[in-house]
Image 1 (cartoon, rainbow, N blue to C red):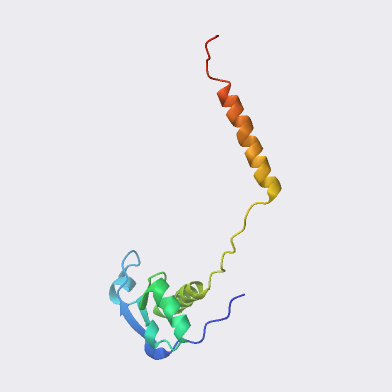
Image 2 (cartoon, helix red, strand yellow):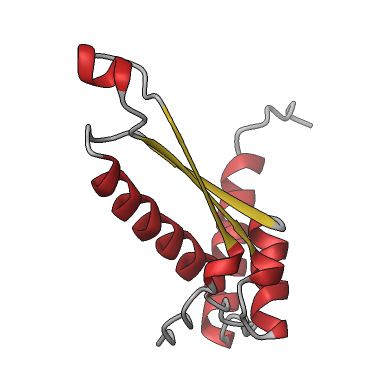
Amino acid sequence: MTTPLPPIAPDALSWRFTRAGGPGGQHVNTSSTRVELECDLSLAGFSGTLTERLVNKLGPVVRVVVADTRSQRRNREIAEERLREMLSAASVVPRKRRPTKPGKAAVERRLDDKRRRSDRKAGRTWKPDD
């Protein structure tokens, strides 16, 4: 079960808008619809342990670039969603692995199979008659 991320402080976000490439005609050539969103994790206002975990996985600054639509407003929304998804995915604490060992019956089956395979292979060698 994951806990939702706290809100990101607006001071941690830096926006940049540039002209998007690709098809779109005159609209793309004249409007800055491509969105670059950078989030400085040290200013995001998260707890120390969460910030440390995010910095270890993503680095000190997370950058998202979106040029999916012809609307700057929609690209801004998509960039915020992607940033939240990245931070949520990186904030998950992996479960600790509990080492296990095979049961006695499994060990015996493996050794029995090994013995049979060894006997089968030993029977393949040619031995001269005495």
